[in-house]
Image (tube, rainbow, N blue to C red; front, side, top):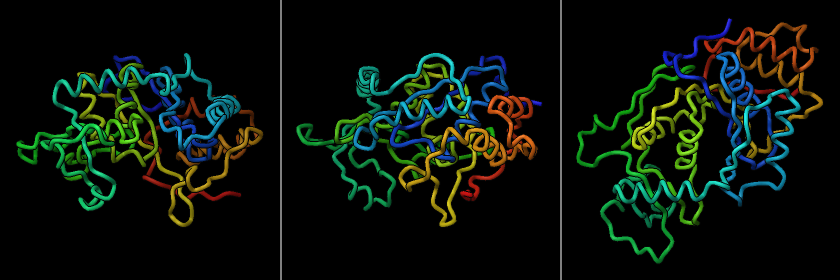
Length: 308
């Protein structure tokens, strides 16, 4: 039976998968795509795909098309057109202009070395500083009111998979970059603006993003939007403890092994697919996954991944 989706069942379910085209899909990204796809379809919802191509220096030519072909080859068909963030710069700038006008965003001249000297959490030192705008600078979002009592900085939310969560925006996040010193729009700006624009109601993604959820929830509120429900699936990690990722040279999954990949993905997500399903077609495996999908079977923040 499908899992309960949340207390917001009256709202049509719209989920999404938003990969970065910095390389081909690996097993960890397939797990995220599979989980978000099944959660949407088990809830009679839509599943959208958005390409987070905001960082050209990290992107690989042709990677976006390869990702889409790989999703199709695994039977993970999406609804509607694919949105490319590189086509939405005007939208992000308009949001930035509004935040600056409302005194919620400010220029920051601090470098990475400055951030390291703060212990990695930005301390707001440029909030009331005169920054030379003719020199490279970033734009940051105020995540808390500096005059408020620290308890007001706490964000609490219920993760659909990981349960109750809390984050202190002042001590665990710090004011977030919305536009980088190099002129590129930042993930924290684009992801929330696009989730609002696409009417996203549920976000199923990897647990490496659990720590940024509190600051994104704050941003949804600031922009006057209803917050989506979030659920974070375990990361696939290597024997050395590193996350399976493109940066760590994770092996690309192959379409010719689609059935095996999907079966292993269901197993990784705790869905306990029967052994005799491993050799079935992708449609049969996805139909089984859809019928038996249960969020409450998913456990943990990470699981060891072994190639065989």
